[in-house]
Amino acid sequence: QVQVVESGGGLVQAGGSLRLSCVVSGRPLTRYGVAWFRQASEKEREWVTSISPSLRTYYANSVKGRFTISSDNAKNTVYLQMNDLKPEDAAVYFCAVDRHILRDWGTTPRRIDYDVWGQGTPVTVSS
Image (cartoon, rainbow, N blue to C red; front, side):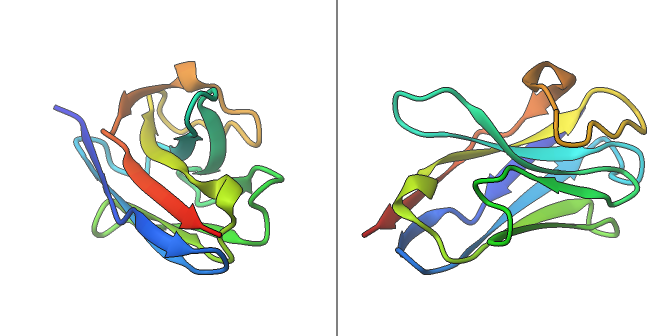
């Protein structure tokens, strides 16, 4: 059974940092990509960043230069380091695992390509 569990969200002041973790079980990250999406109140869920099985990384323009995605394959865990947080980064952050093996979607991943999602971890940024 494939499972995804996120953690690390919380309250931070604008300009601060948080690190989110995504522990994946049931699919090795050496063969499956992972993405982070976020959903702010009353907004659509949007893609934030993703990492391919070959460790290529991609970012939405809104977070480029501030967020860093990384993977520890030994722990089958993906991290999202978020620096210089802004109030507009406040959202529930979801981690999701690709349903396809060895795929690299680049900067155009679709929600439908990810079939296992975590429960989400909330990030609040105070101004």
